[in-house]
Length: 372
Image 1: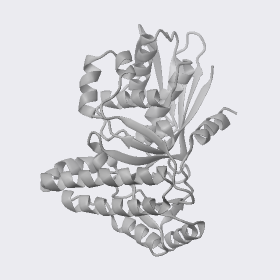
Image 2 (image 1 turned 30 degrees about the horizontal axis):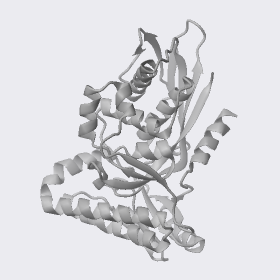
Image 3 (image 1 turned 90 degrees about the vertical axis):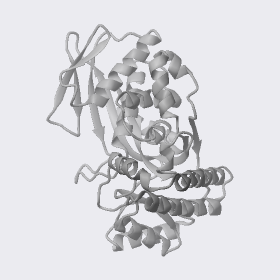
Image 4 (image 1 turned 120 degrees about the vertical axis):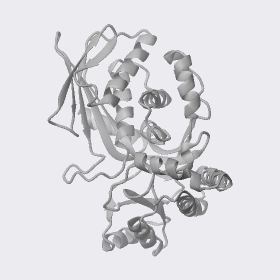
């Protein structure tokens, strides 16, 4: 059976930097740029292959031996190798056996194919989620969004990848998501103590994921600054600089960020457009406070220009994710203002992107179109 799955990229909306702490909240969105994972059975006796559009000249082979995945060059795609093994382990734990490998193909429009521009839409998170969801579908196993998220989080835990898993929540659930960060120390300890099946069935400490909708008539806009940022590099800089900020200052930032994101969640649930826009403005203020406290540049000159040009015509705007480059986001309460924002961005040399929040049905439609 041939399977092709499209999963959305992500953009953080609010709660950045605080979300790396257990129990903190963030708003994150799965967006309408997709990474696609395709699986196709091999002929009997053949080895499977792994091919990615990111490196089209490289084709790896892989095989199964006594339940273990053997890849010709495992160091090339450690995330793929780890995801394959983990989902196979899960299938075996619930009584599903895979007897032969398959061809695996990865394509993506998270970045610009023509120019190779990287927009910071979470390629590693989307790839992890895409692999997990495609493998579950290929084996005809349940693929509930929470299970997909948990398996993807365990893949990244095994690889000791950094971050909050907020990108995994966005790519797993799609649309606008309220994500409460799992306690990663707890997860690492439990992963070494519990069986895989037991861990997946259990409640994870502090974890909560809810789908939301923007308040009515709120317009969402995205622009690219022309520079690329690295989340891992930003988190490394934060870790090194964390001693510069007093504990009281950092604790205050965490408290205020949590209150801000709770307010944004309430605004979405109560359809309060004004409160939502004010909450975005407040989150920008908190991130500027974090930037000063940590001594880390979040709002670069180009991002500040992006924000200023949006605010000039009555929108609210902020950085998205780690900052330091990539994309900025804006929200407005009318289409007229949204159009003025995009004109201002173009005039300032910024690139408005045709990006929207991707709802669940659009994610599934994308997979269906690929299948056709």
